[in-house]
Length: 276
Ligand SMILES: O=C(O)CNC(=O)[C@H](CS)NC(=O)CCC(=O)C(=O)O
Image (cartoon, rainbow, N blue to C red; front, side, top):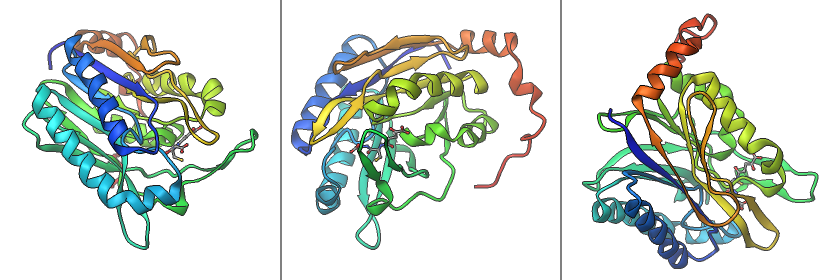
């Protein structure tokens, strides 16, 4: 692992696959021009729309999205993370699936979102992700990248479940992705705090690509894609407009923080690695 630049993309995805992929490529292109070698796209980057429409279009979305990720990774010679996108599953459901693709176009890691967002918010919006999504049943993997360190994965609402991140830390994760489509309502109070908490308690980098703005109807997301360092410092924050959060991931910084704050060495109650 050497020092490198990572980018968390922030975009306003719409119920329009083609437009979203075009928008995503523009941000990837800019991230690469600015030197990023590891680029993350947010949850639902390729389609964000009505649940029924999502399920109906899932076969096309899944096929085009996977192909897009492989083409982009090869074209720009980067390692690319696609935050969740719908992949057809049984009983007219989909999985909310994340993919990590390498510069040769090969799939390096895959994860199906475990925690589904079934929540009635005080602002009147109701979310019932489980109506269309089949929950993943396995812990996310840690992908050991020689270039980028040990990469851990999660998606959006997962960020509220610290046991998932502790599992990743138990597998020696050093850089953890949290691609999200956080609601505007919860995001203003919870998003940054949760990301910093996950970074601090696991002394790991957090790369959090995000959705922002109004997508359709009353669906509005919080934005603030960010990269947080292992001390909990926000290194980059994309704010509210579509754009990028770019920061250096440094193995020296990681080692320094893990020396200054050796809490991972002081684990008492979760030293056994839970089975998947
Ligand atoms: O809104 C949409 O249509 C798109 N959103 C999503 O796809 C996902 C699943 S519904 N959103 C979250 O997980 C939000 C979590 C969250 O916001 C929190 O934990 O507070």
